[in-house]
Image 1 (cartoon, each protein chain N blue to C red):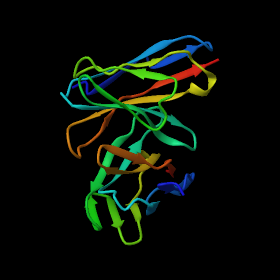
Image 2 (cartoon, each protein chain N blue to C red):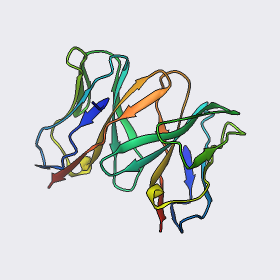
Image 3 (cartoon, rainbow over the protein chains, first blue to last red):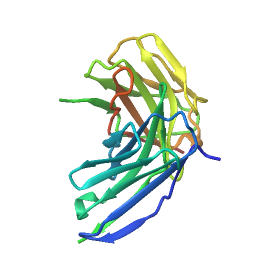
Image 4 (cartoon, rainbow over the protein chains, first blue to last red):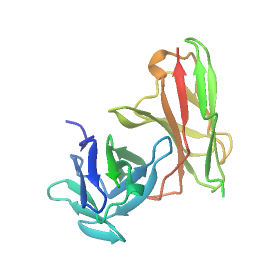
Amino acid sequence: QKEVEQDPGPLSVPEGAIVSLNCTYSNSAFQYFMWYRQYSRKGPELLMYTYSSGNKEDGRFTAQVDKSSKYISLFIRDSQPSDSATYLCAFHTGNQFYFGTGTSLTVIP
Amino acid sequence: NAGVTQTPKFQVLKTGQSMTLQCAQDMNHEYMSWYRQDPGMGLRLIHYSVGAGITDQGEVPNGYNVSRSTTEDFPLRLLSAAPSQTSVYFCASRGTGFNIQYFGAGTRLSVL
């Protein structure tokens, strides 16, 4: 079993839609839960991170962590064409980061 | 405000050639890492360093060599390039403990 599982998509939605991106993980030692956004031919950039179970909101983005189910989600409200990118979930424990394979999202104007 | 700078952006090599991918950061970060990104495989850690003079292997270290003589620089050397090393390579840096990891723009490498 992989430590991190992420549906690669691709996901295509109309502008204004609510987007839900998800990852599951198996390592109970993961302490920080992150979402990175990667535009085409660019490096990943941190979008949000959280330490605990529950929700964390930042503008149109909400990160949700359920440690009991080992499941994290990223919700994007009122999606915009500029949100078109690959979204990678990531986890941190000790000195190591563990990344999902990424979900490709296209928001159609 | 440069952050993490990688050079070159693109490179084509022939099998058996060697080369060095350069990475420099100006944030005085202790931790630096090299990842490769392949379709369907996500980001995989090649080597990392927790400070000048200290390096360690990641998930996929074979065929790569690193050294860290200064805090700012962390070059990645391909000793004898193979087609399996065709990939996009990212360098990243961060401070100590949990901290935001900053990535460079990547080097796209093709080995023919």
